[in-house]
Image (tube, rainbow, N blue to C red; front, side, top):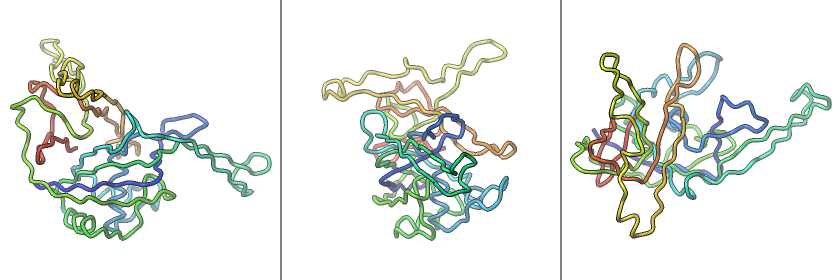
Length: 261
């Protein structure tokens, strides 16, 4: 396996949460896999949405692509956000008197992410060539077509699976293992995420580095029958894990460890 990465960034970003019923549309803090597939699809020229209930070409062709995600340049534990108000005064914009539709969106300021991409996919060569040459067939954007993005820092890595021979730190977001009860014994699996799996880092304490843990429920793909997102619980932390805690799909690239999903 080979892995490449690029850093994508924009002045603003918006990844709408579809399950919110608030006056203000809310955004996910971290970019998610379906959004990344849309970005890569635009870069290599795969088509988007044309018809309701029909998945776009980019998703159908890229859904099995293995990726990893690392937020970059966040302030503390989240990107800075602001509320942007849009006022549409066209007569057909709203059934309300005056035809004035006001939309408020929570918007990420200067989102930036490192995207890792594995080469085990038929479309990888196109993705590799376009990312390396900074060429896009269609304009990619950060969740909304008002927020065009750019990328840089193209890197290639030699890869090996992590063998859990030492305590470790994960340099990307990763899927939180769930509690699973054994139907025979009634015991709960020992591999689920638990705060006690984390070790204190003396080096971080000595350098006055704040330890953080971020939890976020993010889309990982689509339920193709129900036509809605499938979700996983993700974790992003700079904490150190005990080597006995074995997280799935970890890979070592240079001196870093990431998860691909």
